[in-house]
Image 1 (cartoon, rainbow, N blue to C red):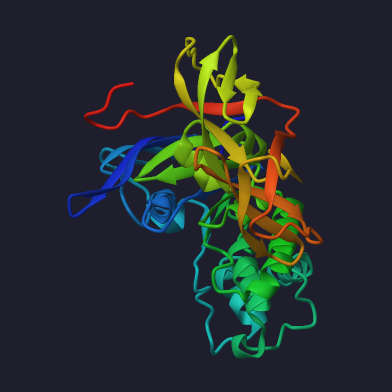
Image 2: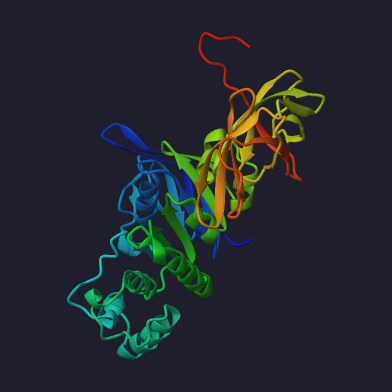
Length: 357
């Protein structure tokens, strides 16, 4: 069995008494792309800095290619870890050409080896023909690829990317994400990147670690995170959702919208347990029904889709996705019916302090 490229075991780090990383553990397999997804300040960049060696963990252990690089009384410096890191701001040398920037990390090999590696890496990142340009003569996407090429040139063991698309215009982001993903897959390098954009995490990563308050809440494939989130907070992080009140009864969940099949998600809830049912944008279809007391309260046009907010008889609000040509205006009475072929996910309802159920 092949050993993981990166292993992090119960790593913790605090700054000024505030916990940034709290007992984080994971293993990164050869060729795998792992994303850490979380809001600003959750600790995701701190994890990268621990792996890179820019920070030492207060507790725990980090191994790269089975070698301990961070632990009690052990701290291998960043330049000796075989780790490459691309920062948010790219950090290109403005007085150097594209070729000179990429060649910066190749000083320890022969000129012939340099020429061969530079030709190879320029072709990999689609920059052939731009070798003599300076950073200010490049687009944001081209600058990103130069930074990536410079980091890949010395053939690091693993690649770390900190918010790789944060400095790119939104209109270019999808194309650049596709380009970078193709480069990483073609190179086969084991990669870790952090982002607050779930679309980036889902589109590029083999696995995603959802992080909050310094902890990994769940780490799994994008499909598993979306369809089987472990907690309500993970459910919110990985996709637009609402929650519908329900009660477990006879192996199903009874709600104001009818009886729903459900997935216990590893828990055994007895009959009578109040739960919150996870509802995604496409989980319910809607149809006009003048006899219904459910009503469309707002309509948000997004170009290729329309998001309708529907208020149920109990006052709950659910968001539903419709095709862009939908003509259901606010004020329309409608009926909702489930469209999911798979069971719904439900979570035990939290009891507010001072209240009983």
